[in-house]
Image 1 (tube, rainbow, N blue to C red):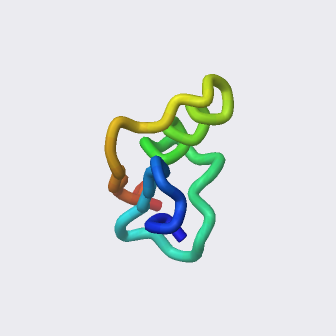
Image 2 (image 1 turned 120 degrees about the horizontal axis):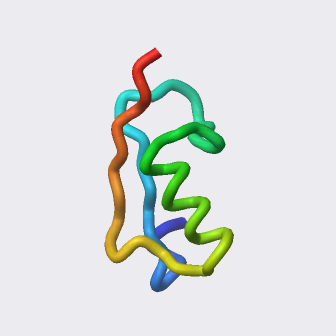
Length: 53
């Protein structure tokens, strides 16, 4: 899907379980919040580390 959507960004959470990354305090959360509140995408694809827990 990411390849099909020109101009999109892929945000990946490495080392996590399942498919939910929002709403946790992580770089994935921050990038999603910025996008939802301003419409700004990350400059490039982003890989975040899963929170320990």
